[in-house]
Image (cartoon, rainbow, N blue to C red):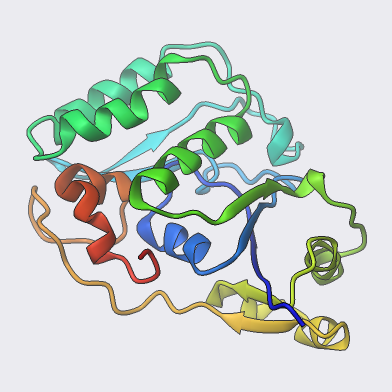
Length: 229
């Protein structure tokens, strides 16, 4: 029987490097944006390393939280210019700023009406840059229903997965028995063991967007990740 692994997670805005390692560990990454949007979460914001310390970059999404992630629209504003200026101020002197800014610029200067499409565009661009070739699909490309763990099991079945790779936080709620009953093995991803890399502005921190790594290390960013080859 052919083995296939899948990761199913919600899209994030400029995720940290562990998010991309999770993607790289699987054969297919399903963007799980059919679920409830949670405001002030990683869906529409992330941290970068600024001269004054870690700083949030937050995409405006309005006040309505009663939406699926895929339905969240981005109001027309000048947020793109603000984010870009902040990135330039924080990383303009970084060794790989010209190269990485060329990579990211289209997402900031081409209109993206929905948060989900913005996140996917950035994720795809960064995956290509660091050499991740995992297949990417949206959850609505598949047929599934049911409650929390049941939905995940059905998504796995829809894409023919034999292994489901999950972040460790899901241990608190994932019904592993449902997966096992369908012959799907659950594997827990480990985010430990990352090495430090050249990083300006004070004490080193891993808990920032992957753009921090990209601006400082360029193509060598893969050397500081665990599953990217």
